[in-house]
Image 1 (spheres, rainbow, N blue to C red):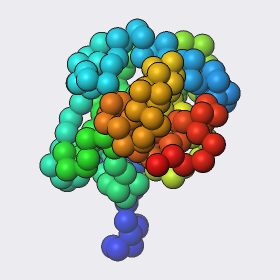
Image 2: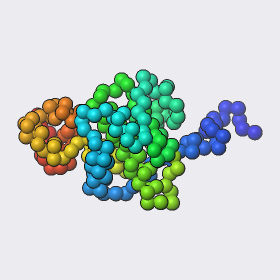
Image 3: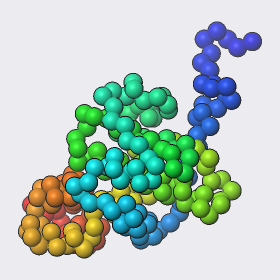
Length: 207
Ligand SMILES: [Zn+2]
């Protein structure tokens, strides 16, 4: 008989603390391959910096839920998810929900959503399309300081949100001003710097 103060991890009838959801496993693709997948996804979804994410996610059967408070998160109520900026729960190939907080800044939120989309493409659709043995039935993920799967989702997000050719043009037009570039691409200035450095356009942080 368990001790009275024993904390049970069981939170559903199967006794699985993750409620049947798998956590993402790194896809192992190179940065170049991940970027190519992100670009293909962006083009397929006809993404542009002005478009609403709720519209582009609908293309894949996904939903966006902007919560006032994390207490509204219906699943994954663990510390890891509670303190993440965003999370995703994938039920099926055309059925997933991305959760973000209403109060976080719009530019940062676009990165968070693109990051979760990266988990869906790289860690759900990809292993399933290759019929991998450990391909998930359902997936749950969030933004955290995890391992390679988090870096992969970050690379995806960056390449998804910023078109490299357009970025080079706009750098000329805005004289490499990271704030004007951030306004144009609807991302944070930090991300502009990271992207510029990743394609070798910024040697050091621009003004
Ligand atoms: Zn993540």
